[in-house]
Amino acid sequence: MKLHLAALLAAIFILGGCTSTRLNSTLPVTDIPDRVELEEVPFFSQRRQQCGAAALATVLAYRGAEVTAAELEPLVYIPGREGSLAIELVAQARQHQQLAYPLEPALEDLLREVAAGNPVLVMQNLGLSWLPQWHFAVVVGFDQPQRTLVLRSGNDQRRLVAMKTFLNTWGKADYWGRVILSPDRVPASAQPLPYLRAAADLEELQLLDAAAASYRAALAQWPDDNDTDGLARLGLGNIAYSQQQYQEAIGWFQSGRGLQLPQHWNNLAYSLQAAGCGDEARRVIGCAVAHFPGNGLLQESATELQALTAGGDTDVCRTQVPANCTAP
Image (cartoon, rainbow, N blue to C red; front, side, top):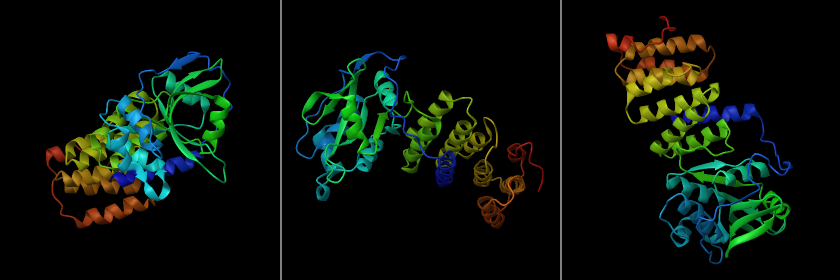
């Protein structure tokens, strides 16, 4: 059922439109310090073509992982490309139980993350658009009055780069940046839907404890956001279902602001079926079809559930049916 969550998030991203580039942020950003440097971020000097492994080791070690660039190199290095792909770095970050949040293409957000104690893994193109030289580095500091950034980069533990120069090289790499942090934390610049998408990525990889921690963090961070409430509870219900905790799943799908989405109803019905409440599952899916006429997912589920063994209708089962669900 996690695929239902992923499809839902993808649809909301499309409806929400494309991300806007906000690179012309007015400096200084007045609600953060003029100067910040995360001196405690470790440094791994790279060997030739090892910048991806070195940069990833930098952020993972900062988060407490016992890892080195040499250990990561065979996991992220692609010989045919003489380097690492961004997707490989993100995959390894997740395998270390970390959430990889996609940074907005905004200098202001980059500075806010560093000010909050979050080094940012970035990709740059140090070459030309038609002859690229891809490079991974970690932003660990900034000086707003001087318009400079501090990077862990290559063999330099403290490379000073003008913001203008960095924006040029970062822009030629499509402003790729990731905040790598514990899944129970929320980045300083995070927005609900990208954060939930990052949590869903953990769920899809069956990193269920990490995903659940992120969904709970989202509920705590954005308690008044309807989309966050519905999607995070859907994710937590899906995780409980996959762990065969069917009563817990039933609770998540109905909690918070209630059954907002077709997926809530759909997955509630399947949870009831799995919990031995087949009659109630049919009743719920019938209500769902009535509430959301024309929904293909619900219609397919109704057909499937009708073909399964009935049963239930005990006092416990009857209490699991939503109050607004009358017999279809």
